Image 1 (spheres, protein in one colour):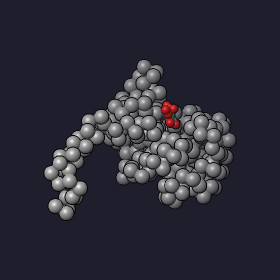
Image 2 (cartoon, protein in one colour):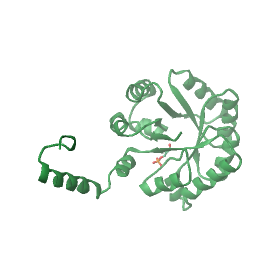
Image 3 (tube, helix red, strand yellow):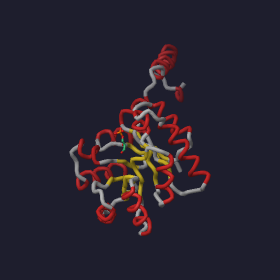
Image 4 (cartoon, protein in one colour):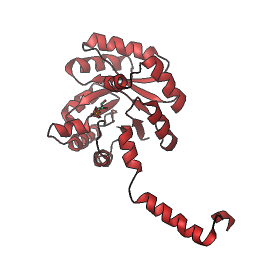
Length: 224
Ligand code: G3P
């Protein structure tokens, strides 16, 4: 089942896009929460109120040692929400992922910049893998190639980790990730807006309706 996430802590955007899209949950990172100036005690109940109890929320640790990351993860998982713990796929992060998976804690390996790095995180048992598409592009590499290569490795070795690409700045990047066969994605509100607005669409809809009204007035098709 494909999982669509919003990469935002803006509750108004979550309300807006949940009305028209099948949102599986929310991804956050420390910058996103800081930008919205919202702590989890305020944010998590609000998200659940909008998306429902089944909403999955990805929350990143902010400590750097393996022990501290694990401690954060255990405490995050005590909260009464469906939280996936985001752990950077660094050396200390991979060590934390191994420990957390031995305790059956759901983990997303984040800050993935290469297929090889993502593959190692998948081998450590990460449930989700988040390559940073636009951030990879800005290094001069290809974010979509990393996504496609990592998906191919996951498929070839039949690993359970799901790609959940993040960091999108345009709809072509989203299309590229989807074409690579990922089974989850997270998009910021601006990209959701761009995906839903093509300049040709509304003029077409207006024209169809004007043509109808020119002949039938306010009568609706089922009344005609
Ligand atoms: O959490 C990672 C991802 O959301 C980063 O996105 O737009 O800051 O590159 P961005």
